[in-house]
Length: 304
Image (cartoon, helix red, strand yellow):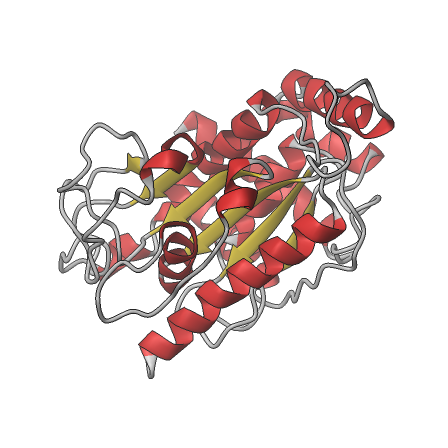
């Protein structure tokens, strides 16, 4: 069963690595996901895009945009900092254009490092990111998901709940100060397993690529849970009175009900009748080729 899942993931990953997702300005009624690939992955979503796609199957009418940054080992500090700055730019751009839309942020490896520093600030004195996402993180951003983050640190802040996976150690660039992350603890899940060479300082390189087989469905369900349980986003600049029911709120509530009632086994049918690209604009037609594979992958994951 694991061998079948691995082959399916390999096919899906190959397709994702050929995709470049640029948000087209359409405001999704589902969740808008901003995704940063790992080091040396080709421009586009990279492997972490599999998580975003599975989340879009659970939350209809969602959209996805890729962070455009070098993702290189050479000049890592500059590359990572560009990724963090791009996260900030893309979030603020989307909040301004779509103040009622909920947002999820995803990153793998170097992309997860860029993501977490965009959310929490510098992980180490050697880094120089100074993001300002406090307003967006308090309202629009409902989920932050990382796989194999080199700034992972389970040796501090135990019990805060965002560290996931099996690692109880710390990564290559372990975060020294987690106090700036604490206000967003409920929104964050960062997966790191024991032995990972980058997030756990282990010596097992294969562990660093194993998250997609082990935690894709967990991460997608976390995003859907956060989306469904969060309050409708209200732009404070447009009203000072308690909000009345609006078209946007109704659409959000309908989406929530749909995502809640949809089971893993019927997701593929939902995607066919209501494809992710409808109203989202940042999807490619190749999603329709990936859908049956990803739907099967979700079912296989549940059987493991």
